[in-house]
Image 1: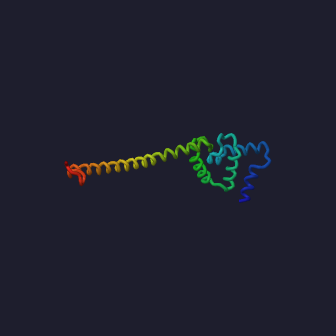
Image 2 (image 1 turned 90 degrees about the vertical axis):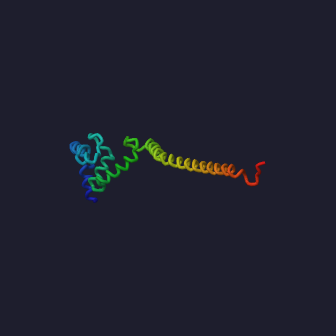
Image 3 (image 1 turned 135 degrees about the vertical axis):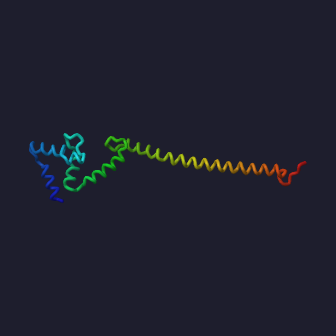
Length: 146
């Protein structure tokens, strides 16, 4: 593993000539692996983070699948889609959770309302039975018709 790391770092060199730098830049900004991994955003330059990821993949410390999984996790968090995680993404996440919670809240409120309606209907039915029994039975027990 150390040998692979040394080989990669020597390949890109610590001190490079202008000619060697041109070759290195071409590889790290436009090379086939860079294109496949989608590491260079513009094809003309390479950021520190892009270079770091490329060298980690070349050293076998990070796999292409690892990058894909990390990018998928990032995409779930980057709700604004701007390629950066920010307070805006946090606010969008809160709104998303609120929207998901609203149907549950509506169901809960509807369920409570139905229970209240059933309870009110039961009271009305009991009151109606009580009124009919008073009419049929001549009033409350102990009352006279006089």
